[in-house]
Image (cartoon, rainbow, N blue to C red; front, top):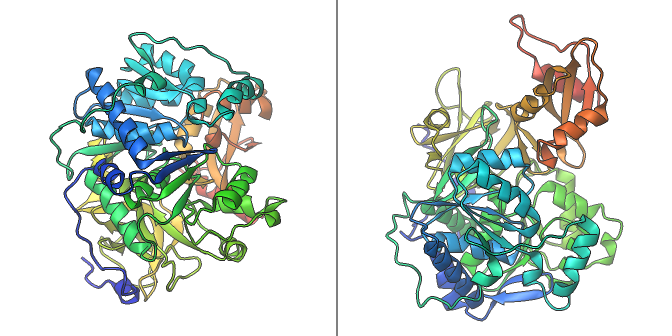
Length: 559
């Protein structure tokens, strides 16, 4: 057990070494901010604002309606929405009703959605009108009994709300009329209900009650539900608030590009903003031009993001036309932050951009560089307050010293309860209170940590975690494929991108385009291989195991 925490010597005096966490529920932060910042804007969305009072009241309406459908404490509700006001309202509405939020990526294919809904046992799904056909199919395949449907236009200002359906039909060839019935419910109808006098009275145990199931991949590649308790998520927010010690409650604007269905967006934008009484400026998807215009006009001061987002803005041909000087601080997550991107973005904004580190199993942040104090380019920074970290040797079963390479392990109140209905995988990563991250790294003499490799075959492309096994299984299902292995290869924009090495069966031909179309029909777009290479054979060990690492190293050697 390591006792020394060298990183604490470098903490500025404003950041406490440890934190006290109140015994409260996650939804209580919205209630508190609604009392303190009642008429202050909580959300800005494409030209229209909603106050903390409005968001709180609408969340209570959603909770009341969910309970009227027979929902009980601990029931799971899938939220399959982009960043929009309805996503905020639905999230807190589920929590107020005593339910568990099941974070659901709107990009999922029907195959991926079916697995998530079956595994979580969700009986209610809240989604967009354009995703309704996929959600409706799930009623026959899963436990889903109720679908709550909304549209982006419902929270747009006039005249955008009138023009949106026309644009939607033209750009996406999408037009659908949804009729309310016993199992299909309209979000806008729910919002016409009277505001409940008070939140539902539901017994709570914040330390143990699950607030969110955050689905992620694993050693098998099959997505698993990370069980995050109310205390897990609240602890991570308190750490975040301590780290950003110069920022005061109620005085900032947060640019919400990182999606809420990603654990990083859920904590750094959705929950942190509400906890602090800030205004979140939401964009439903990342578009560099739209993001630049929004920064120039709305003047956000905090900008959580991923390297691909910052790169996209810096490389936009019109970036010099926009004023980005409102941005004070940015915490980059989800992938390694290139030094040159950090330097260029700080020069363009005058603010600070530092790299952090985390994973779904830790709510997610465990490390970050100091924003206004010492930070080391190329490092993931120091453990957050109340968080312990060490380098573990699998060979000796002990802890390693400075500069020795091993697996990064972490311990703290933000670490998950475990995986939903998966004791075997839980036992593999949670040992004696330590979370084994699967990342290989080292700690320097000052307590700053660095990542050098991955124990897992994880690919991180554009901030998304991609597990090769899942893609390989899809490729193996194609009748023309004899062998397939998927690996991450370097990519200037995405950090890594997905490449598939394929051996075809004898006397069978298939084009790259045909295989790509097949993969796209079964995988979310960000998981689909961007490059295919057909080979006569793949490198293997003496026992026939495909040498994925040899293929990866070969790709890097060719750069």
